[in-house]
Amino acid sequence: MGFLNWLLKALEIGPPNEESKRSTAARFAILYQRGVDFLENDRFEEAQDAFRSAIILRPEEPETWFLRAVALEGTGRYDQALSDCNQALTLRPRSYIYLWVRARLFLLLGRYEESLTDADQALELQPGEFDPYTLDKFYSFAATAAMIMVDDLRQEALEFLKRAIDCDPVKYRELASQEQDFDLLGEDPDYGPRFQ
Image (tube, rainbow, N blue to C red; front, side, top):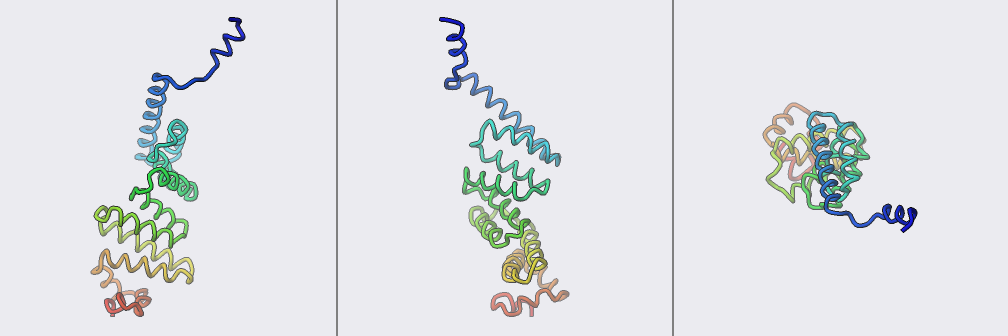
């Protein structure tokens, strides 16, 4: 066998051997853990880099896509975060936490109807997982954001506000006695009587 043939044979890339698979798994685990550590310390840029490298090694892992989405959200890159969250949901479609984060991203992007749909799906998948305070905070923020944006979103704002009220009716009864924002609910047959 001549040198050229030997070189061509040596350069052939065949199926990965067990050592190569273990090496890739070990590198992935290190990068993934590095990303988690950066994320826990609010070092979002470094977390994105670590998760990006981990995704190259194992793109079939939904959790890595999801955590990079969280890191991207931390730097205000909501469109990119939404893209990664969508990829995570493609790989694991029934994850309530992925849906909840995507609902938050839709909310931050002003896509209120999609936000409401995802939040409802997350609650349907895991009804007891979210405490009333978390739900109230999400829905009241959404209602406020929708009302501030434009009058065309009045119906979406009312839907978010109704859900916030359901989370903590006592709080909202007290607020209604002090603020006029709740006049919007006056015509609603279910919620109007609660605030008169």
